[in-house]
Length: 201
Image 1 (cartoon, rainbow, N blue to C red):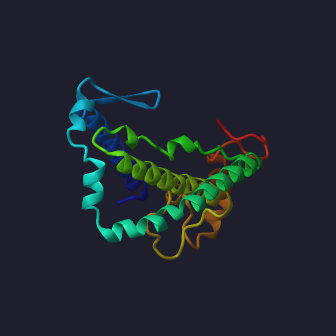
Image 2: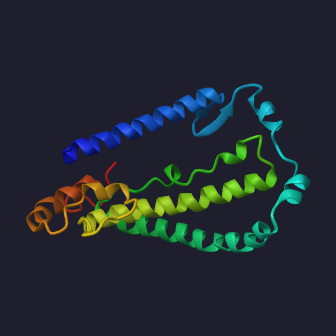
Image 3: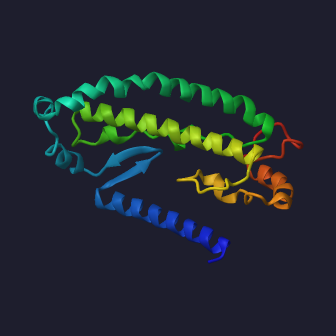
């Protein structure tokens, strides 16, 4: 299969995933309005029938899970520092490189606390997990754009779950391709830094 055909298949798979999300919205009777979840009338009441009470939740919790909670939540500080530092990095450096800024809100998504079938503890866990994984995804996108700008070369060995930019990188060992593709790959990221000091729209 040609390389281009493979990438076209990836695009088609992403479109299929989007269609599955649209179908799930119809099936579970909710819609998004300006990024906020709105359930159909009666859907939230139906969800509440499945909410587990806090006493029952704590009574049924496994001791080893409870013992792990302090370690899990101890990562909140490193995640918050990473979030802040990555944001400062891209706000400072991306305009200098001519790279379009990463929209943090596309990666840090916190919406599961609106689900009526989750109790207060489950909602808190979901907020934390959404934030932590969102910060990592956001950081990865910033790092991926940085890598595309400075060193868009694939590795000699297989990389597990590479970031989105990696598929456009130049093959390992392709010296002529690297020299030919470096500036075009940089321009893909936004305005050419030699033409403008601001990120592309």
